Image 1: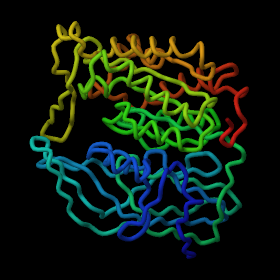
Image 2 (image 1 turned 30 degrees about the horizontal axis):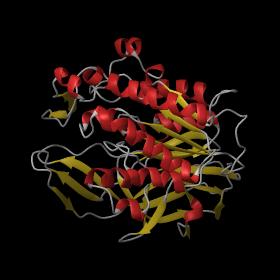
Image 3 (image 1 turned 90 degrees about the vertical axis):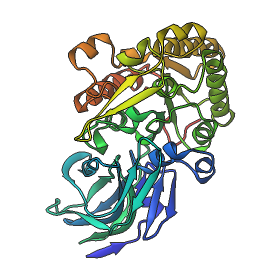
Amino acid sequence: MITTDLAPDLVRGVIELVPGEHGLVPHRLPARARAQGDGQILMAEAQPSGVRVVVRTRATVLELDTLRTRVGYVGLPLRPDGVYDLHVDGELVAQGATSGGKELRLDPTTGVARTEPGPAGTVRFAGLPDRDKLVELWLPHTEITELVALRTDAPVSPAPCGGRRVWLHHGSSISHGSNAASPSTTWPALAAAAGGVELVNLGFGGSALLDPFVARTLRDTPADLISIKVGINLVNADLLRRRALGPALHGFLDTIREGRPTTPVLLVSAILCPIHEDTPGPGAVDLADDGTMTFRATGDPADVATGRLTLRVVRDEIARVAAARIPDDPHLHHLDGLALYGEADAAARPLPDRLHPDPATHRLIAQRFAAHAFAPGGPFGPSGPSGPFGP
């Protein structure tokens, strides 16, 4: 077996690779942004949603050593093992998991987190086609993952992007991949495959909050296409009022335009979430004995009159900001999230935990997003820049 250094040219979908205890830790925010974030976004951005090891090789065996960190709640079972998706020439051919690793236990009553150490583990794939091929190994989107060692039975080399455009997407836990079956079947990953683009996923569970350091990351990260999907965290975190939302969104977009004046930007509002359509946050979690979580809204609908946010209010504000800017910014586009998942969809396939879509609904959202965004004449359609990093 040949051991290959895990250099940045072998890892895609990442903002920074940082030395860890045993190898390299993928981060989806740069160091400056991480220094300004709180514990929630730091945990989310360290979970490598959309990050994959990509090589060209004739290898028939591939092994990846990683040191994972699994997250769970005190007194409850840990989340299931994270899934690794192996693609060969664009097709999902195998899945695997690793063992060992650290355990991060959160106390939901106090907010205190405790980490227990553990050993590195190995995910192994054998029987791959004995020919030159493109191999993509998608890392688990639910586990913090330190890359320790890559071994194959034939040499590997970096794989060129083939002129594909880079799509930089920011969103909430739904974009991060909550309740998706695996890392390459989150809705952004599926939409990227349908659109033939390279994904950099800045979906952060609980943390699509119009943070200025995220706007600067979107501004400074090379990309041909940018999308921003916001709404649900603005409501369930209960951090803003209606008066502040419009200026905050304008400022977020202004920051991006400082460095990306003509890059296509698609602004997307939240999909339907019945618990928060007319009831403000904050959101709360109900934990069952088996570790199952469901979500509920705890605000008072009467407080909407005083400026508290609901999803209906946020969608209206996003549409208003988009309408005000688009006449002077022809590269800005708006998509109502209800076109991705609306009332009829909620009746047919309700959100299982009342907040996040199930795997089949991730696929539905991806299909609808791709049909809108990447179609001829769409905001990310083939008439746009050819990449890389067009305008």
